[in-house]
Image (cartoon, rainbow, N blue to C red; front, side, top):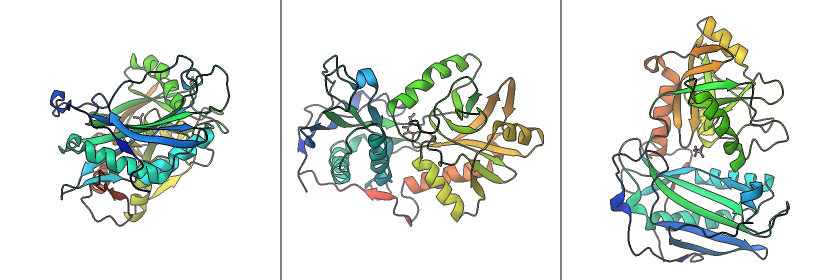
Length: 358
Ligand code: COI
């Protein structure tokens, strides 16, 4: 199934306008984008075009009802100068799980890999190489039928854009465990990477910003006791030498690929961990009795990000200084090495981009 993707090259590159010493996150975009349309019962017109704005009918249904999903993955260069992508098979699988939950059309895995190969080959020079940088890959899909009716759309657009990025969080993050707002409950869309799961975090984040917090730590929707995840990443604490993170069984947590990578590496490094319900009371108690050793977030964008403080009710729980964070530091370094292809790929996590453009 080669050559299913037509390519129209950009006449001019924008790369000289980008300050690669100050990338930030997600504000610069490369010269090309991948697009495909679902129409008449099949994916068609797979193509790479110069990066451009969309022209849309005002009734395009995702803008009204939020039938939109996305993914995030990263490309880097290995020490041979080859372009590598970390666990893209997991992203397309999760995207198709999200698609199913949102009554959208699944996207063919092989076409996804071919799209990555071609897009990353075309925009290869955009892959930053400085420490802590990468080329963030954002696949997304939305219902594109122009109809003001709530129903399964007849048409969808699948798109991949690329953005050279630095750290999502340059500093340790302060989170607030809110009893007021809820992200997910059993039967909802919590396990899907659906746009609305993230849009719903913005108002709570705005509210807690004034109190000095950066992000929301979501609690379960029923008892408002158990930690779920942070607005941008999965969450873990270390109590008495053991890593604790929410289990996925209720379908309320995003099954993070960095989360899965971290758990796999912990098993291999003999770091004890448990996936189970973790209550804020347990974290508070551990903080009081001196057994709360570490807290961190796990995500593609965020990698492993240190948590500085956790706010809960009127209490601020301080996590020990970064210099004392053995587990999150170990995991952070191990994951970065895996992602950059600096260690033997015993898990088959690295996909080398096939640089064939024809
Ligand atoms: C990612 O980590 O790639 C995500 O999609 C999270 C997003 C909130 C930046």
